[in-house]
Amino acid sequence: MEKFLEDRIYLTINNYRSSKVELRNDGDLINHFASLIYAHYKRKIPVEKIKEIRKYIKSTSSRMSSFRGEILYILSILLACDDDFDYKFIEDIYNTMDLLKGEDFNECDYLTLTAFVIAKYGKNKDKKVIISKMKEVYLLLKEKYYNITGEDDYLVCALWALNEIDVETIKEFIDTIYDNMSEINIKSKNSIQGLTNAIILNGSSGHMYRTIEFMMQLEKSGLKFADQFLPLIGLLTNREARKTLNLIEEVTEKLIEEESEYEYYMDKGFRTVISLCIIFFANNFEERKYIDELLALGVYCFIKSKNKGMFAEALA
Image (tube, rainbow, N blue to C red; front, side, top):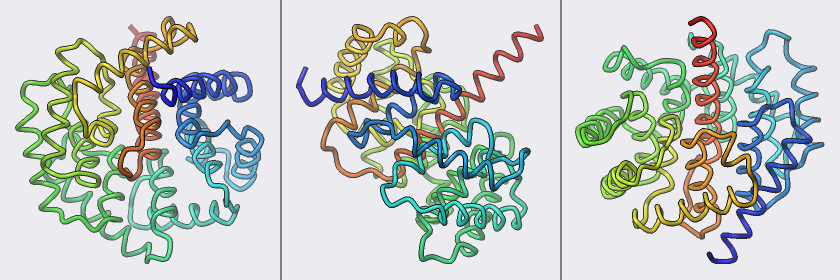
């Protein structure tokens, strides 16, 4: 294994250990999220900065606000990444949230993350125009895929609106990808919308076919990959599939060797996500947009799915 990749593995592990102690109330999945985000930027986790941001948000939002709970933990980790962070930006997120609610989007955790993304990438743009376009895309998506389009698609629609992508292009890509996924066991078309989003924003039709090839190789290799992170596959796998799979196995073995929790206390599909992110972050690949935000969305959806499963099990 090359030293630069090994160094990134050790940084990820050390960040996880730090997060597990200093941010223990976040829960293990968010601890892993923090470890990956800051390994991405070759940095240790700024624990005190994160805590100060959380303290500010708690003091400026109501107890029943959608800015509380797990989304607060995730949002503060993202905000603390910015060396030039200013608390005025949080006010901008609040104002963006109000604009979104004014367009009849449901106030929820997904909308909170969406408000953050629009505030971050919509600087110096008319946010009312962006949100109006987002609503247009969402309604058309809802009309075509009424049974699987919901609040968890808010972020996807916002990214399409921010990048002024034509709705017809979105429809064509979704249909094309869906038609090519017949050999792959994906549980829902909702996941394909997320995959479509990543490819449209960062790739091309050629990228799409390389992504599909990679997913087929994943299936053949018996490697698990959580559906909630399909957008990351669309971002991070634009290279030789077999080489990437070999690297995933190497990184996973190293993680297990160095830290037992990667073996005994982790969903295998989530572990594959961690390994893939480490590989991507350690290499000088071409720039990709929205990696941190899509990773955040995947982690939050994964947490929701786990909580739902535990609730169903308790009622059984």
